[in-house]
Length: 228
Image (tube, rainbow, N blue to C red):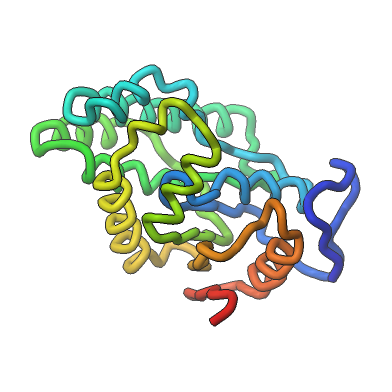
């Protein structure tokens, strides 16, 4: 098997000798690096990407500053956005090609349960039930974990102005919600990655080793803890 760092010419195959998962979903808390990994995997495998678009959510910055007031419109906007992405894929018959996503549609309710009060959650669930969210099941889910201090540092380093208002309490609540969600997740092969000491951007060996391990997984639940 040959793997490069994901910087090859976009039309050149960069992996040989392995059967690749056709649809990979990367998940994890804010700042953990899921979009970075998804983009690198797409470049390495010559895959299309299906990415979240937080910059298009007009409520997100206000939510970080005042979560109670803006939680519901923020969540509904993300829900409708993802529904539109999935519908567009279905209309274009793009479920057949290979791709990497930086989200699972299942996680929408995870965020809703953390941020919404009981009445708002009931309304959100009514909207959710009326949407057609028949996303394809991934062939592999990669769940990136990191402790709170690592998330805080990565959020600071990427320097997105709106994220400066994200509270530690919110990040901690999401970490707990993700842990609970993936404790029961069994819809696809799952790789849980301790990403605290991994630098896939500046240390190519970290990325190569992660991809090599990832490509050994065809079923079940697996843990990747480099250095342990």
